[in-house]
Length: 116
Image (cartoon, rainbow, N blue to C red):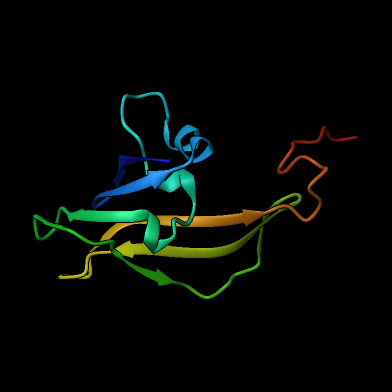
């Protein structure tokens, strides 16, 4: 694992990432992004920066978990958790995350099917 800067909508986070997480975070535009990774554990994040209060903190952001949704978002794809990384000082959103799961891991998720 190595530490990287991950961009969020309201700031950034420094976190240690696995190779798999690094691939998810890289959208091919020269920056790494927080949202595609999903939920990061607090012990993997070392510091965060808030655009709103223009402050960098030497600890992870707060994680606010919304209720488990279990919302069907596509064929064979369920949103199981939604949350936000927030600034410890002002509470502004640094970034958001979503955790999805497939009902059947052997099947594709959200695959378009031709009409009969």
